[in-house]
Length: 620
Image 1: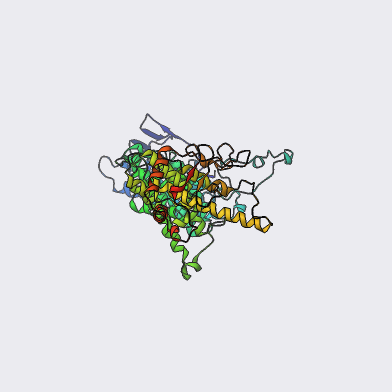
Image 2: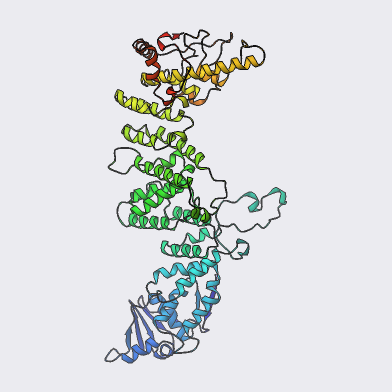
């Protein structure tokens, strides 16, 4: 830390009791200065030779107390006045980063300028600031911290702006040019601590990290931190990712319980202070996509709801999260509901985020020439294409649905809204959606028949995997209509697979050759009986609930495992569902059975004619 000594005489200020300070000299004191509750017994001449204010006060004093003046409103109080008084007496005074600001304010108050005497205190402090303090990194930060106790005295001075400019300039230079000390408590790698075995105990110097300045700035109060960050942005020499890292570190430092209910302090001063801080952090976020993680943005959103932040701040967060929603995880989206809401999680907030994502993706699909010309490289990693981003978000939404459906108070309408907000072509598979819907049916057994049909209509049976199909045909919670759809599309794929096998065998000279490999399509669709007039469903053992999610490679749960004679075992369907299926098919005609049970636009396409389901033969 830099320091400067003024004066050469020894200190002969002494205390007389608790509230009296005097000078130990042979000459008796001829003036009493009241500074708050402290009385200073001093001499007029040293003070008049340096302070223009003291000249005015003593000249205007009259009456019995002409030898007493009061300056109770001096900035810095008695300690700051004592520094100035010692300078007037020529007593040695040491200035440093901790007291230089208060000494400057007191000197300005006492008018200790060049008009009274050359080389006065204000001039000497200015030289010390320019040549030492403002050239240092930590000294500038310390001085800036001390100025918050001296407002509004420093508003007319340049000290605050000079400190901010000094700090911002140093943070904006190339890290290779950093030669001063800084705080960096991040976990270092072994080679950074000199423990690399290849160095044979010789410590090697490594380059300064790009974020070397972040930790020291976290010591500032939010108003000064904001001014420094804005000045750094103005200089445009720091990457947006570094600005984002600084904001993230500062937020975690000042709101150490971010995302853990720190707003439970009530509506008092702490909550208001945290709310103001959070809104400031949100306003400082760079506009660049990816400057902070989506997980951090969602934590800010969760905290903003708990602290009841302004609608402007919340909308800004929703827009930013929507821009990079593909980077989020399911736990990030589990935003608790506020008091007064029935649901466990805030579904409406997630709906708004996904809607914002879809809107931005649709706008990005048709960029204007002007927007294209202004586009800059925001991320070092390759960005997802709009199509792959939508697929990722669709999977994220399905995973989110699988979690929130465990809430018994989740309305069916909100569940459907979340499913439908994602375009159908963004879901290449409906396995996770099927899992979420099946869980909803299990957690809400009181759903009506129409509600179940409406819910299951969201599933495209053609996009279910082999394991999901096997599970669904045995799932008694599903409406009969969906089970028939799954059976229908399974049979279509099975016929297509058999035709492909026959053509493949013919190309090798044998159209009747048997493929002994247990392919994935066979596992998904079952095997078709040689009799074209009958559909025969083949299944292995009974499928446990949701066992299909582990994949069809597991030998213990593979529903299409062949026996030693290469034949496939029959599906064991629940008797209740089997009875419903058979009775339904007996009441249906051959043509209407297929059209009514398909429930999909694909049923309008020309398909191979099949025997009605009343001719199905089941093996047990």
